[in-house]
Image 1 (cartoon, rainbow, N blue to C red):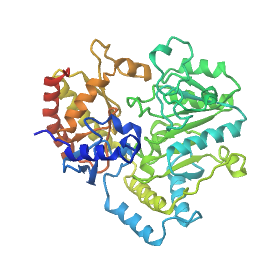
Image 2 (cartoon, rainbow, N blue to C red):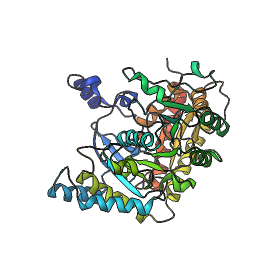
Image 3 (spheres, rainbow, N blue to C red):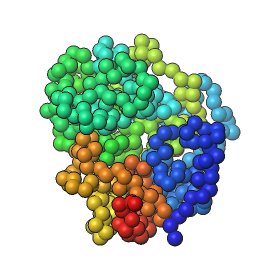
Image 4 (cartoon, one colour):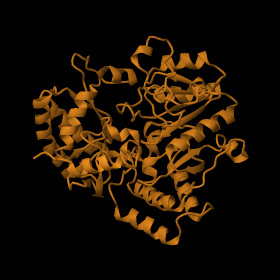
Length: 445
């Protein structure tokens, strides 16, 4: 029988009496039929308060590269908790983590720690502006760099703005500082000619180009041939910094991150999610030249909980786990993910569902083609916005959830180091009745 969620529903209703909107992150309202409440997790599995068991491909929005509650990570945090929770001072742990990052990441020469990748992105933008004396940051449609005023400029430009030769600088939230949008230039992803036009248009005004090396926040779109190389070339030619936002890709794409996977060296890199294994931890790493203005104090960087020892203890364990995977990582994650993608596509074909999984495997997106959509590989945000049938994907995701297969609400699936071949086989077995029920029940009345 499909899962039901009475206890989660009860708790969600109760939450409205004390928590604004009933949730602590607006994105969680996307989960249907109700934002779930969880009780425990282990390895590739997680259990909600109604004791429903899921094979989890959401993985804490990608943070749990190591699976749920790995014993070594729990032990590392517990051992540090007995020694101290917070000092607002230095510890040898921060050297251990920083030195590991320098060994692992090709472009890392110096490190600063933060509590979230949103903060680290804000620090990177400030640093780039201080470094160059310029005001503008160039970013790409569909690329997410945190929920701050700066991080969401041009993220989801509505189709009504697409007629302009230059992408709009819209923001999905009210209440932002109006001038913030004027400090950005927006370009289309995977369009090198368009990128060059934007750089030439604002020559001498752009401090940095920022991107997700693989666009995981929107449809899991890999960089097209020459895209990352063009960004590096333009930054060198025009005296701009290249900022890689590896919040999602970091360490999932290998010990050196997506920059090593794709062969590019940014000036600054943001790491989040997997670097802390589920603890609130992030890092800004960069070359000595790019970090110079932080060293001098001209670009202020601070935070009471920066380099918190609990998070550092967790991160040291996490990085050691990645290092232990060896040079073949992430080949196994890609293999398992591609098997899952193939199985989902076969089920889609069997039940005449227009689902077209897209991505490298270690992470991928469940693209649901709109009726009448021109089926093609999605290469940028506009392709995605034109093709993705959000209501239909939401319906299928709910059917999958009710059979115990959990993916991220927006369609992203992630493979963890805890997932096995048996997990993939079982997930596909569970998915079969979900596809059948979706095919019979769509469109909804």
